[in-house]
Length: 493
Image (tube, rainbow, N blue to C red; front, side):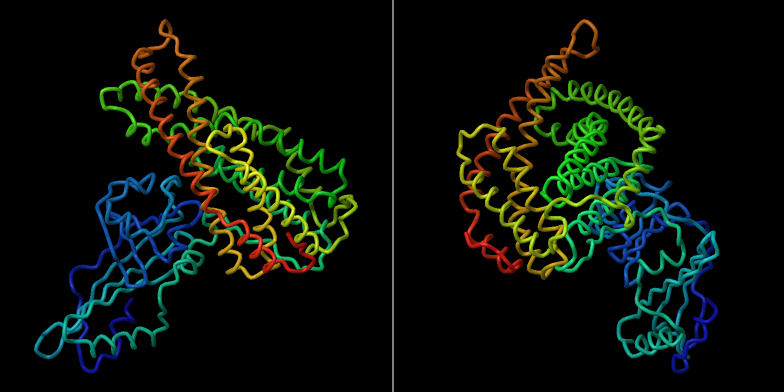
């Protein structure tokens, strides 16, 4: 940081402003790297947390330890950190030593024109980075410009948090960002299907350690999403993979999904606990507390069971077999459409799925059974998966515009399905309450009854919202957009 004292400032002197400070630090982010992706740095050092963006430090707050989740942050710091998932645990990405120094730029009359704060980060592995913040005093804009020019002359550039973290901590425990599998319209369909599934298998492997360590619930969620996508590819790419092999793959993928269900169900119940608390009178909260404790105990058992499953030789062997099966050199047998150009197949598959979704959507009425609404949700998810799979074949900005109304409708369908499933789960939970063997059984039964009534009201509300949304959903516009995005060979409705 000595070079900062040699900045050419037109005769101003550079003086230290307070004592220099050196202390250990930890850089904090979640497994998705959301803070870094938002071009911010979250730094814990010396008993407090500081958040930096391109302008320098934007917020700081005392914090004795690195926080577990974003909700544990001071509210101002939470906003400064940006759009970060509340379900992702904050992790120490890497550590080292940070030196902090503040300088004053003063004229001959000892008037301060500007202050500059500098943080020099030295990672335990030896990487170094410098973060500076210039704070000019009012009326000295010309001085500020000269100082900025001097900083740039030293090789400074606007904050690039991603590049800085990669330089400091090249082995940071951040999951690689999902990127679409790229392909051309004339590539054989089987080759694309193989690469799409291989990408999802990689996602499974990347999330295994987080599930076993129980870092946060999103590792399991992302693992299950990848499995659902694998099953969808095997099923949706009809005729691309040899039919017998496709059927066998769907069974194998379902077998991988099965052990994850109990833990995910309990995760969802605990995630919803705060919302449930707002749905019943405070007098019944003791019963909810007892329910939550019981669910948490069951969750601990389910997590241990799934972690043990993921460690087994049988599971590891299955994953190695799948990785080899979808490796580039594998001779995966094609179905009758395996050699078709992927562009032509994409048009056929998307149009077929879009028509099926439209047919189910138009059949939904206020009294339609929940199971039919659930089927529509699944069909909509398959259509969305296809559109996302084939993103490399079209304009991504236009695709985003098409996906937006589909996602909005999917959100409503998801909320309706959640209310329906939660009501069913609560009924099963209530029936299993044994007053003779469970402490707090009476309080739990009372809370469960009130919650069940509240969920029934919510379910009715979501059904009305769904009916209105389906009535407003423009199927013709969706069809037009799809034909515009995937024009080749697209049949007319």
